Image (cartoon, rainbow, N blue to C red; front, side):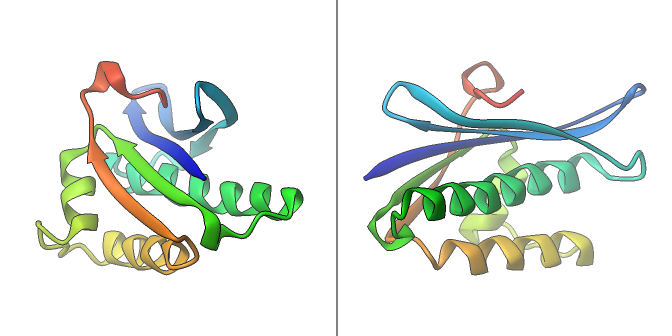
Length: 127
């Protein structure tokens, strides 16, 4: 079974937030936006969006009694930095990002396979 997870993080003068959308086929099955602390950086918000998305998706699979080991996950984001750090192309030096990256990598071991794909902002379903 192939699912897609889109993630995003935003910081404006009005506040900081992260979001994710999980799709199966053409159907959106999970979607959420979370308000974060104003001290959160944009890159931390991006990572948080992905982390929350993976955690909620794993919970969702549990309710369906579907093993994540049967799931291929495609992960889409418009943050080149985050995508390249997760792929191991860019070094991740900031301690707070390293912690988030490690949590994400640990959660991803639950899946049959996963891939990180950079998309333009306009193509990102998470806003």
